[in-house]
Length: 455
Image 1 (cartoon, rainbow, N blue to C red):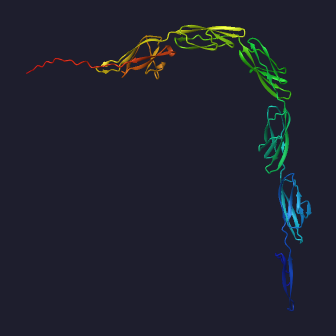
Image 2 (cartoon, rainbow, N blue to C red):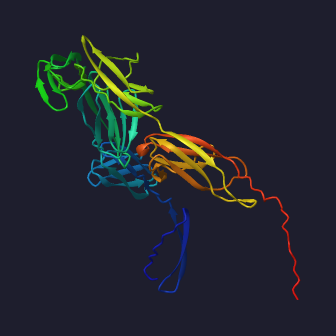
Image 3 (cartoon, rainbow, N blue to C red):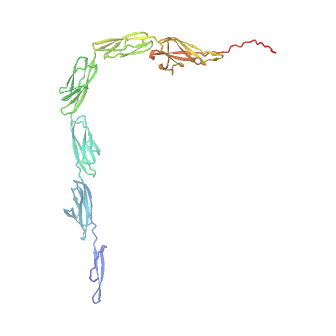
């Protein structure tokens, strides 16, 4: 060129040589050399970080011997390359650094501090009564670590069910961690008021008299018998129940702290005995159960038994009496068990008839002199087994019944007859043996024959 200017940007560190050939207007020529010494470029770096609002960090710059930091407002210069920062603006906060090397070369770099929101931890408090529970609620994050000083519980709900048993203040703490990993702490307390130890007395009275139940344990009392509610501050409840046996009463006791306890008591009412017992009718040999009602004391039967139920098997109509004693009161009653005769009968097995040497299937059983027999069922075998029930048995008209059309047995066969009383309330089983029929051909006889010749 004719300007004598040469822009250069060598990238090789150290000495870089250049030469020039100069020609004058007269055509004369001369040469010269020059050099460009290249010092190393500054490779500036600045670290970044993520913190929680309210905490700090230190950014680190490298690449030189002198560092000029800026956050856009404040400039800080040092030779360590360390910049302590504690930004309070949530989100990204940008920092820049100008790095100067020992050769005077300069480089720049940027970094950022991302500030996650601080955790605002809270933990509720409560007041309860001893023996009850409550749930403390923590807020401010996504993970919660609770402690009562002894036990640590971690969850993501922020709910801590507690049931402290020490009266007075009980302290709880929580460490709350946000989804960004930021941490905050809070404390709460549960104040425990003394539990109510409720009591209610019981009593035993006679029907027609009264008593007073006494409740203790608080300053207010709410009584109930299941129907009527009575409230007072004395803890006294006059009662006069008229239902024999145990009558239950309950009381809800409230203390001056508002704590509540419950208790139950009872009034047992002994009655003047009012006895009832049935007077049944049975068949001879049949058992029945006499059930006594209305006795809340000591029971004594004429048989010497003392239970409320008495099983008897009288052979004839019998009167049973019982006495109930309750305190100084007693009552007596009697029961007449009427005994009807059991079914009676006469049974005859009639073997099958014969047709020559072959027996017919016409064996039968004749029942006569039937008394107290309403229906008859039968089954082949020594037990009634699958014989017909009362509803399917054969009705008896008068005092006789014939069971016919029975097969001739190959050997002696047992039939079981069931004789039902009226309505099927009672029955007896009877075994009848059927013998096989003996059938034979008549002895052969000679018959005269006359032969006549006819022409």
